[in-house]
Structure formats: structure tokens, C-alpha cells
Length: 374
Length: 113
Image 1 (tube, one colour):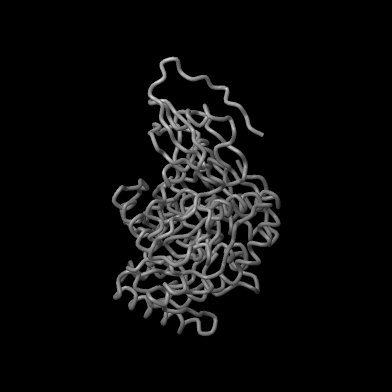
Image 2 (cartoon, chains in turn yellow, orange):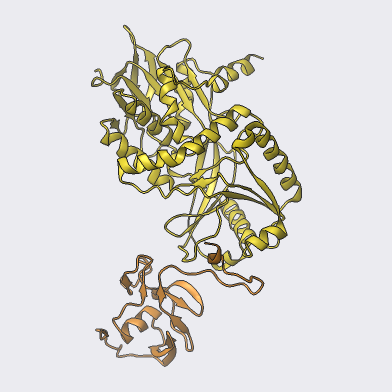
């Protein structure tokens, strides 16, 4: 069975897959998205919703520049997506803090941001603020906070509404989403294109295929000759009851969602494919939040969950064309929310190899092939 | 408009307890939940939601969260899950709860919003 006249098939219906699909659709292609099962690990449904620049690519200039471009494109991306979908993304890009209680970590992060500043020059700005100065600006910050970094370019969005908006916009413009379509095998088809075998035993044909399956990517990536293997990194998150007062700031670990609750997160654990939340990490998150904002001490947590980040071996995105299988692409990254504005625009130019295509050589998959051979 | 309660007192009523709701005296019987006492006092809204709509106790078994009320300074307390005690100070909530003011904190966080 051959899929109805689709020119390119996106394997993966999360934020990365749908952003990429939307860009290709708007570039004029007929696009099908194959979405997996409800029980799959879905970073798009468990993440923190940051559109974040500070610290990204301090050790890798191409990533710093790519992220900077993504942040710059977000306002227009959000405006267009909201218009297409009718969904309010609750985008705010009014700057963000990273809070520190350990002076050494504060100093080390200052060095990282200085490096990032060197990479980006006038396209970046940041401040390192000592604890007392911080408390003069924000008297609600607790006394154990020794300092904070601030980047005026950082922001956040409602990530669940982003996912909904991408789905609606894609379908509104004529894209096709097939749900419960788990691809278990991909092979070159006789006469060109690809043969995708689904878990239910059916086969789909695809002239071209973009692998955007998050943690489901590794097996299929190997079948397409890619060296990238992604691995899960668990983060745990809390949501508090809704608060009337608006928090006067955004941080990488505490943000107020537009409905009023605080989302608290930022734990990292390499524990394999296990997204269960743990009492110890929930406790650590709550302590962190109360250290930063002592007034939260009597605020209730109403939900907690774990979710798995999608991590490449070096933490940077992979944008790769398969050398052995022309027409097959791999797109995977950790920061699918931040980079959505590029995945829905420049990435289509790169996949189409148009004149406007960005140079994404630095993000090719061969960097892992070389390190595996070394 | 004041809505009269449709609830009758229990025949085996326990000792009379005295509390206040927004400063006005209300009574309960020992063994009553706060939600029962509030409903017995009046059918009026006991809070307004974050969307501004009126609410009062509904499920009476800890599920619907419509009976949220401030109890002795603790906001968002489920009135149907707390037994009435003599001297309790209850307050209706309007919208989402606030943040507690800290003695060492000269300004409220919403001053920066």
C-alpha cells in the first residue's frame, strides 16, 4: 500500500516533527506526519516550555548562533502560528534568570556566559547579578541565593498549547497526521523511496522520510545508516496551585504559567527509559523553590511528573542527510521548543536544499561516526 | 441576593461550635465538615473561581475542589475534608490565592509584575 500522494513523510508527531512538517508544508510540499502511540515517551507533553538562550552553545559556537536565531524568530513564528491555529501560545520573551546558591557554580556559569558572549558578540547580552543587588530588584528572593545571571532574550511559552497549535495549523493547511502509526522498520523501497513497516504490520511508502521520533529515533536511525544514538535524561517537574500575584520574573527552574500555577523543574537523571517521578527529586525541587522564593513555603504542589529529555551524545542537535539513503533525514535535539521557530522555517530550506538553506554542517551526524571510529 | 440553605440540621446534632465566615458568625455541630456548616448557613457562593465564576461545595467527598476556602489563613483548603472546630476563622476566596507576606520582605512579589 502506498500512502496517498505525500511527497515527504515525517516520522514523529511531537513538537520537533510537527514544526518540521509545518515548514515543509508551507514550502509547498505534500506532507504526512506519522504520530506514534499514546504510551510513547513524549518530551513534547512533559517539558518546561522555555525559549532559552543563556548558556546554550557556550562551548560550541554554531549552537549558540543557531539558538540565537531561533529566539529572534519566535515572535513572528508565534504570531503566525496563533493566527493559523487560533491557539494562544502565551509567549513571553521578557528575559530570564538562572539562580545560584553555590558561589563556585555562579562563577563557573559567569565564565560560560562570557564564552557565549564572545561567540555571539552584539547579538547577545547578559548580566551577572550578586545576591544583594538581586534582592534590591526583587525583594522576594531568599537570602541563600548568592547570585543570578540574567539574559534579556530568554522567555517561555505554554508548551502544551504549542503542540496543539502545531497540530491544528498543520491540519488546517492540508497536512495529514496519522495517529497510532508507530514505524518499527524503514528500508529503501525497490524503485526509489522508502518502505515503512508499522507496528500493526501494515506498510507505507514514502518518497522521502524525515526521522523526528525523539527517543524512538535510535533504532530507525541505525537502519538508515546514521551514527546518532539518542538517550533519555529524566527531568522531574512540579505544578503548584494557581497564584493570584504574578511572579515578577522568569527563571530556568521556576516559571509562572499563564493560568497562574508555578512550574518548578530542572532535575537531571540518567536512569534509562523510566519517566516515573521520585519523592527525593520532588523534595529537592520544592526545597530549591522555597530557597529562591521563601514565600512559596505554604504553597501547595498539585501535580508532579517525570519526563524524558531527548539527548544526543554531545547534547547538540543533529540535522543530517543519510549518505547511503538519499531522501532520508535525521532531525533530533533536546530543545525542541526553543528551536521550533527554525524547524518551521529554515529547516525546510535545508531539507529542500534551496538557495536559502542554512549551513548545518556543524550539526551533521558524522561527528558521532568519527568519534565511534576513533 | 441571599439563597436560603436547603439543608436541615441532623436529628442527632452534636455540640454547637462557633466559627466566623468573612467575620460573620456561623455555627456547626460537632462532627460536621466545614462544607456542611457553610451549606447549612447559606446556599450562597463560598468562593469565586480564578475565572470569576461563583462556586460552592458540590461533591462533599474531596473530589471536585469546588468547596475551596481559606481556613485560619490557609487558602485553597477543601472545606468538605476538614472537620469544624470551635473558633475557626473562615474566609471566602475570590480568584487565585496570594503569596504570604514575609516579615523580612518589604514588598510583595506582585509589585514587580
